[in-house]
Image (cartoon, rainbow over all chains, first blue to last red):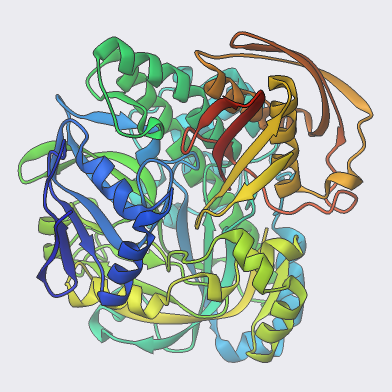
Length: 476
Length: 135
């Protein structure tokens, strides 16, 4: 295998064997060295980059962003754009948690306000935001209502009293993608969702109260309405059980399609169908439905948080405004270089540059906000998309810090309770529904997010706007 | 017997038994151990379970995903299985208890069983299954 640095922080794997395009990885030397070291392991991200580079219809590169780590099928941090007539649509390039993403709200108060009521706020959020295994949401929906969620997305939640029209304007795709086919989503998937709209989930999902600690780009920060010490609320979750079941249901359907169309892939989890086939179109319709379910889910949670803030701080609902909401487990039909492509982002954020019509008009001169979730003990970032990103990565960026340690290894190293105490000493109140779940999410189990973001910034794929530090973290 | 395998983002599981039924049940036990304290879950409610697939390995994934469907749709955590596997079809009964975050010491939610690292094989008369769970 020939891996070489094409320019600073950009590496390529030259095509060999059945690779159709080169692999391209955004990484500094430390990240790259760790990827190479992992090559001998059964599941490793570099091999997954190569597997994706070998898929029919892939355009330009099999990409990995700087938070790259092993996933299933695609690596996490992986981006693959496919020709709509010769390419595939794949479960492994989207994930089971379809449109898992991040929403960031501006709370309209400062760090000082939160510090005065930090514990009270943490407890109120922990009480009001349904989270953890088996939690149930406020909304109880039947199958017809779920179908409305799938076709209308966040707007449905707003109509039910969860949010404002302004929230929609600052959500990717205005909170609803076209092309949802509720009939392509099984009854089982819908049944799993009856009680799950407006729930956070668990694992790496969280609701975090943060404050703006550093401003790197005054002009962009101003456009995004961000000032120093302002409080933000970051919500990380996805489409809940409905999305999980969509992935599950289509494993068998797509595997049959692969046999039917004679498609061979290097790994079974890369199961997919030609995008331009009845099976591919049906799966895409189901994915679009699940994308809308995720927008609705984050919409409900954001509004529950809004209500907590107005109660605890006596502010108005209008003071709690949405910065942006964007997914990082998606397949989107997009135009790049004059060509329609189906762009898979698995643990990668869309990062469209200035002037893109998809970016809300008040941010369009700057570029799309790119929301990067860090860990509960370190920090998060808000970046903006660039023209370089549009040219090089189909307008995509990293999505988080990226794990370096397995969950089992993290549990051997940390205890939930001692971690909570250690973070409390740093001024961060962490409340979780599971102590072992907290240990698995220990900051030390992740790459250094500063390093990951630095690679995106220095390569001009997405540029730093602000850094945010945690004050309260609610874990599922 | 089951074992959890190292995987950065998710969790790999491998399970074995003298029969496919035993290996599959052990795989389900591995998944339960990720979601809750198995010793705290009682096998008191009964539910029918039935799945089919194109091969044994895919059947294992279908079985695990059916358990996750039952968890979300019926609110049941399943602990014990009395199932028969014929070819690539599984049918029988499963036993568990209504999910209770406090009582069961719930940990993290498994979203789905995936085809990643998926294997079903036989070695020296012992049946083995393996896959990666998305958490």
